[in-house]
Length: 168
Ligand SMILES: [Fe+2]
Ligand SMILES: [Fe+2]
Image 1 (cartoon, helix red, strand yellow):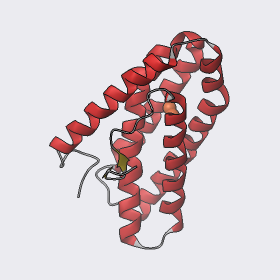
Image 2: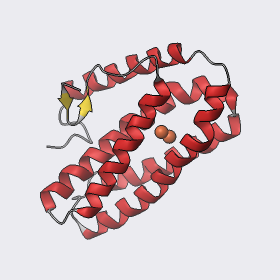
Image 3: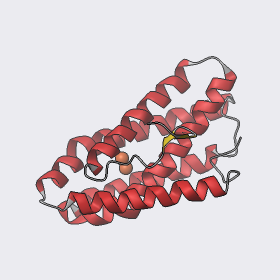
């Protein structure tokens, strides 16, 4: 974890352990939400709020772009349900992005987002990931695809530092 792009590990995606990589993101999401709600400092709240939105966008793109389609056969209905959760999260993220993260109204929306996202990641860890692990899929190949997509997404964001989600 030597390089940091707005808190993102660069080029360190463990391609041989994609589920561990997703769980690491989940832990980071929990930590960021905790920090966001615990702080009274406006700058910290703003910074942490932006960071969690960016992490969620990257994480959901990785899951929707590679992980979900590759593991769909393990439990198609569960994957559909996960995609519906992502859509709900995306609508909240889109409402939050133009707001000031320290605005009390934003804090209420962050609370809604945190409640639904934390439940979603619990369900992924308790239900989806064990099924994927038992399905006999080539997790190494899935991990390599996820690594490639993550590298592309980070490169895109570095080229467009003013892209939504990376406001400075
Ligand atoms: Fe997800
Ligand atoms: Fe996830």
